[in-house]
Length: 67
Image 1 (tube, rainbow, N blue to C red):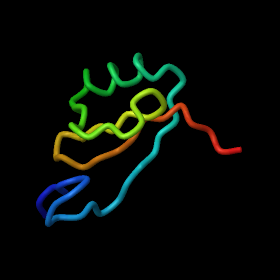
Image 2 (cartoon, one colour):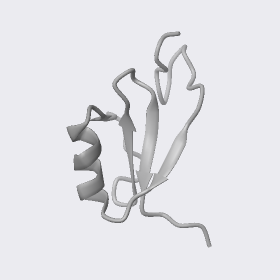
Image 3 (cartoon, rainbow, N blue to C red):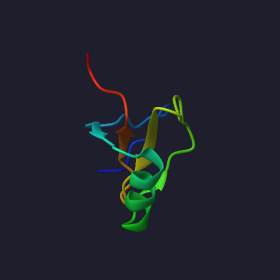
Image 4 (cartoon, rainbow, N blue to C red):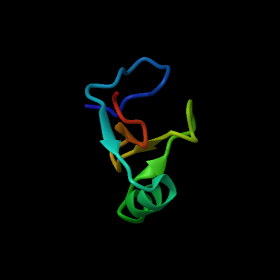
């Protein structure tokens, strides 16, 4: 299956994960170090970072916590 073209495009995402981050910059750097890359589209970069796994599937690292 081809990777999604997020946020727009013909191939929609199949699943999306929001993962909690304690320190957003540090945790993004750790994800990048093991193969993730930052997505071009970053709707809330101060609170949430959208990354793509090596296959191109998006996931978020977030400091946002539910109330």
